[in-house]
Image (tube, rainbow, N blue to C red):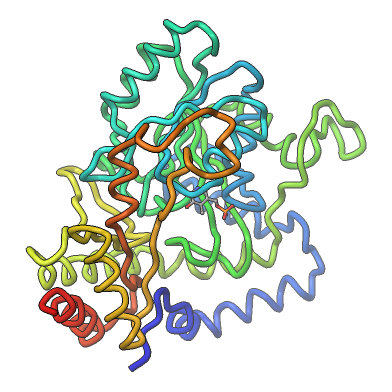
Length: 377
Ligand SMILES: *Cc1c(COP(=O)(O)O)cnc(C)c1O
């Protein structure tokens, strides 16, 4: 039995025939850049998440970058986000010249802590050095952030909200899908994300018609009325037509896959209850289970479990071993160890188990019993 961390082969077998039909249509049409399938995908995606507009793009990173560019966020502006996320979240803030202000996370959801968020906003205002402009909440591991509180705080302090739903696509809060919260939402179609293509890809969602127009322009080098009229700085941020058809094929399986992912998570939770700390999904939320991450008691116990799993050929991963405020690239921001105790302590205890819709019961059982075996050593 070989267990994949994320099994894209089993999924490929299901879409193989339908996908090749669509791929060969694109290859014959030679419309590789912004072919009609890109617009078809954007319509289907915006219908799925429940937003007016979708602008597909070249990666989740560009999906985060483009709204910041469109809003004119830059030097002297503060953008509040979590230090417990993938580097892209703070990278885009720095790329536009703004300053990331990190806010510690909730120890149960691993998402930005709303009380800490407000405390940091008030502090930045009272220091008077940076102008608070936006919040980038991250839907970590597929669980939407606490939008009930975050959206209220954003309103109170007049801040823009850019949802980082790179891992969140398919998650739900309050009957609404991830990618529908805040002023704009960004997702990623990196192969390992809940909805992945066969390369890099991403999308921005919004209900704001002005932002939509700006995003279309920024995606193609800041184009104006036509391609050779350039009215602002933009990027080469398009999604390939070939990736769009991969996503169209996979989107058909997606609702069923979400259900299967939730069943896998349920089984893990039942088998691992009381052994390691299993993920917490608050009432009214559904996770898309981009990752199934659990907490060991401490770093030593985590090491023991991971070694035992790897001995048996079971892959694991650590998301994230080093919070963003301690990354070399961000050291100039002046943060130090101890600034975000929750993120730092979770970084030492967390690890992720194989998670995908096609994980079999026997595999889940074997993974779980191996963890329990390691705990009894
Ligand atoms: C993957 C990821 C991104 C970046 O997406 P890419 O498509 O790899 O550029 C941004 N934020 C988070 C939280 C991610 O997990």
